[in-house]
Each structure stands twice: as C-alpha cells, then as structure tokens.
Image (cartoon, rainbow, N blue to C red; front, side):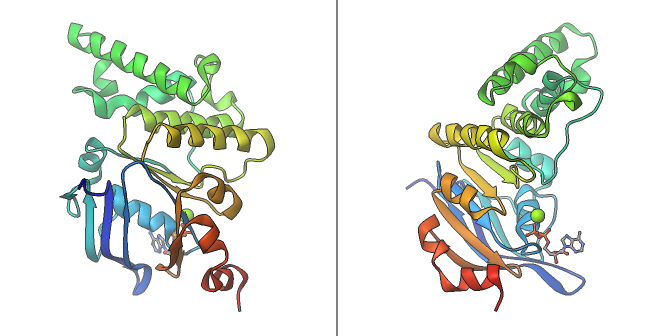
Amino acid sequence: MTPPVLRLEGLSRSFGGVFAVRDVSLSVPSGQTRGLIGPNGAGKSTLFNLVAGLLRPDAGVVDLGGDEVTRLPAHRRAASGVAIVFQGARVFPGLTTLENVMVGAHTQVRHGFLAAAIRSRRCRREERDVRSSALAALERVGLTEWADVPATSLPLGQQRRTQLARALCARPRLLLLDEPAAGLRGAERSALAEVIEGLRGEGLTMMLVEHDVGFVSRLADRVTVLDLGAVIAEGTPAEVRRDPAVVAAYLGP
Ligand code: ADP
Ligand code: MG
C-alpha cells in the first residue's frame, strides 16, 4: 500500500501558552483534495506553516510520503515536494507575470534563478529550462497571454493565479493553498475554481483552506474542520456541513 502523501500525527504548536494547533492527526492520500476549514484563528495557517516547515511543532510528527520530515527545514521540504501559496500572497513588483513564475522554479534547478542570471553556459541552459517550465505553468492557470505584462497590473484574481503558477512550477507533490479565493468574486472566483478543479482532475494532491464553505465543498473530496486548533470534524463536504459541532463552531452557541 502506498503511504499517504501527507500524514500528521499528534501535531501541536502553541504561542505564548495558547494552542494554535492542538494534537492534530490527519492523512491525505495521493490525489486527494482536502479542504481545511474553520473560523478565523482556528489554526489553519499555522497548520500549513508546520507542514511546510516554516514553523516547528512543539509535539507530533509530519510525514511526507512515508518519510518523516518533522525536523527538516522549509527549503528541504520544498525540495521534497511541498509548495505553498500563502494567505494574502502578492506578486513581486517590478517583475512580469512570467518572471514572477520563474522565481518559483528555482528549487528545480541546481543553481537557482538568481544564479542563472550569471552567464555561464550551463546557467543559460538552466534559465531556458526555467523559462519553459514557467510558461507551461502559466498555461495551466490560463495566463499565457499575460506573461509579459507587469504582474502588478493584473487584477487580483490573476495575481492569485500567478502565485498558483509559481507554486506549480516547483512540481509539487503536495500543494497547500491558503485562502486563494479570498477577496475574489464573480468571474475571477470561478476562473480560480476551474483551475483548481483542473489540477484535481490531473491527480495533484492538495490542501485547500477557505473561509467559504461553499467554495470548499465544490472542490474538496474530504474536509477537515478545525476549531481552536483542534480537529472537530472530518468527512465529505456534505457530512461536515450537517455536523452539529461544525454548525456550532461557525454560528456560535
Ligand atoms: P487561521 O489561519 O485559522 O485564521 P492562524 O493559524 O493564523 O489561524 O492562527 C491561530 C492562532 O494562533 C490565532 O490565535 C493566532 O493569533 C495565533 N498565532 C498565529 N501565528 C502566531 C504567531 N506567529 N505568534 C503568536 N500567535 C500566533
Ligand atoms: Mg489563516
């Protein structure tokens, strides 16, 4: 049996004596899109930071595809396939859309994007590879025609998809999306949903944090619900939506 792409066991992290993430255990099998919902302050972003290695847990285990990575730093986890689109992520100003995505490809080449700017023959070849994988990533998110415009000139929804392309460029085996649809509505929201749906169809393993339960329900195979750092429910979108503990956490007593 293949191990899950992500397995968390008893994961906890507190700040100043208050649990942000409390004894969380879950596993995400290959190809699954896992929704992660919960009220503001529930610990969703902290959980992502623990998975990506940007924070160390006080207790518990993070396992990626059968390898324990609890003590590995963030860059080693990125190299082993974890990519994250941060909550409220912005594009880098002063770069085109394509250049923004190329920055994300640096984990795939030996010398990195910045080093690739140095003009050795090998670096020039690597930069060409980075450029073509960045173009491929832009195509996956439907932004090919905007490749050469300043990224900051794009509307918010397209900036989010640029960030998504940047994460995809690293060829992740686990993609963490932290509120990618926040602040988007109408066509921009559906365009993002369609891109995520497409990735799901390709079999990419994802975790999707979203405040909007409807958005998550449409895209996730299963949903985990956090409240005050702890898992209070897990199931199909339909199951968690009718779970009394979930209703109480969202609507209050
Ligand atoms: P969510 O993403 O679900 O809204 P967070 O993971 O951002 O929740 O936050 C969970 C809790 O941890 C909150 O109470 C928040 O104030 C606290 N917290 C998160 N990061 C820090 C930090 N770096 N320092 C202190 N407290 C933090
Ligand atoms: Mg958050």
